[in-house]
Length: 169
Image 1 (cartoon, one colour):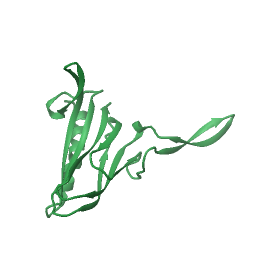
Image 2: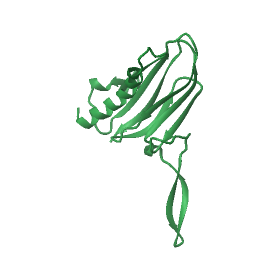
Image 3: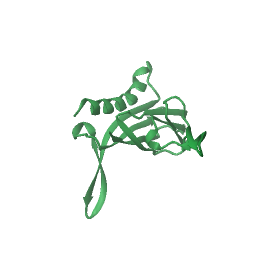
Image 4: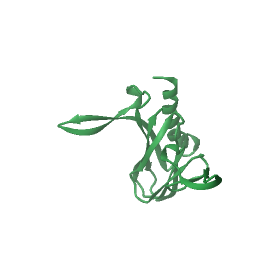
């Protein structure tokens, strides 16, 4: 596996482990990162998606990865206002984001600092009829550099997974 690909995978894994490592007391929320290679197979005449641990298969340019954060409320109470962030590694191109729990607001960023719901907009300068004008245009998802999930409420024992799909450049 190339150094670049290892960096992508390790960078995503670190996101999930830093939250737990920073706490000196047990966290009420466990967080586990996984990096999976997404492939398609035909089984019984139907196409199915197969997810394989990225450390157990070859990752090459063009590979589709599912970078996941699985979380669980291990406390006896309700957790609220949980924020999960995930950077899109520059060696990859963002495709989409998902989350399995209800009450989640997904936001995106092109600079890793400011987040908003899709579609993101940007201002570009163009020439129209010989004049320079500024226009607002929609940012392509492939330009996203980070994703944030705002989870409003997580009951005791509740768990879920938030993930991004990316393509390796």
